[in-house]
Amino acid sequence: MKPYYIIIFLVLFSACKTVETLPDPLEAGWEGKKVCEVLNETKKQRILKCTFPPNVGHQKHYHKPHFGYTLAGSTFQITDANGTRTIPVTTGVTWSKDKISEHEVLNVGDSTSVYLIIEPKR
Image 1 (cartoon, helix red, strand yellow):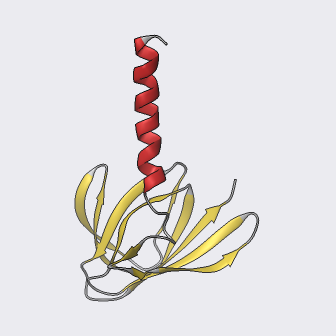
Image 2: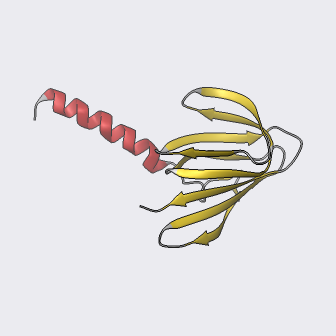
């Protein structure tokens, strides 16, 4: 095997390995407690409801492509590949990701926040 093939393989393997070792949003919790529950699951999608009281977060985890909706907002500290930032998330906010992503969050606000995460199965 040529040296540059080995380097490409190692880079790709290590990139995949990071996500494979992280839990998905349902498996991830905070201080040993679950924060998400399955509301509905079919062959085509999974819908999670995730609840974050003040000072509760979501350990570092990955998401497959998904759509999210904020049922109740708060202020979050988010740590991802772009660094750490604090943002207010208002009720009714939506977002979507079309590729795998990873992050950790902490509710630093004074109210309980609730999200729906809708994950299509491919």
